[in-house]
Length: 88
Image (cartoon, rainbow, N blue to C red; front, side, top):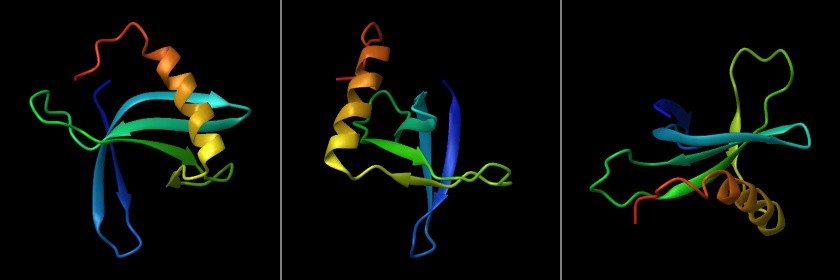
């Protein structure tokens, strides 16, 4: 997937992420993103939750921090990527 998204941090800094996978669980959309698409560089992965209301012009995402939710969503992404060669 070659999709990039840009988020604005609370301090106004613009952050670039690369969408690795996306899914919908119980009506909520989640993105698995990384901070690099360079195969030679180690990347950090994050799970973002879509907090947008229906009809919003722009999507609003926040990082999933709740451990139970994070673990559950991580397992879904893990199953989705099971057959994909993840960079080690």
